[in-house]
Length: 280
Image (tube, rainbow, N blue to C red):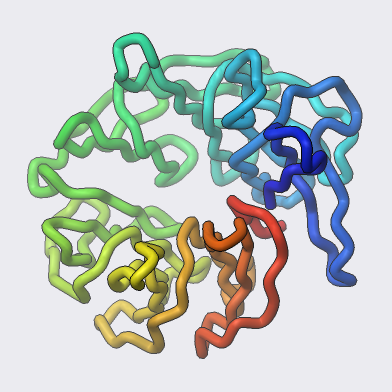
């Protein structure tokens, strides 16, 4: 998760909370750093990719560090990065603040230290080692890492979220969450809501089911038949534990807090100061 180690400074860093509840800072430890945010673990959980801090960073840099904070190094420029399923490449997203537009998504080959532009767009997601899904204005595309693009017209205006194995997707359109094949075909409505997040095994999803009086999303979990298992726990920026038994979510007020809940019941298990959780 992300915390502010110095109460007098607005610069954030990434911390790991161990099973004993102890927090260990893992960015800004092995090199001089202007802060970090948006942590993403590699598939084998041995490394962490992070983006720049919202405040204090002099450059928009994607950084990788080992799980213990050692060997922190700059990989490329960007705001957020996602690991490929095999952990050998990063999909990097950035933004042109002058034009207020996304810049082309890039894939960085970590072993060869090479990068390649894929396509203009945002909300990029790995479907498999050779395919990326993305949005471009109101259109949705599947793009090979070689650059060949295929538009999915049946998803026009939708917000897509592909399953962990890339075989199906949840998409949001006009306040309803649908389940469909990976190309958007065979869609059927499941529940009203927003921001679905797949469970690791692809059998359930967490989503926002309305807002409370403080405008914080209310979390819910449903299965792929549209049965809602539980709902009503405040939180956003949701991430599942690797074994699918717990969820972590951010709660922005009254203080920035990460809340961990039981995925089967919605029971709150514990809370810690921080934001932008990412399970190791």
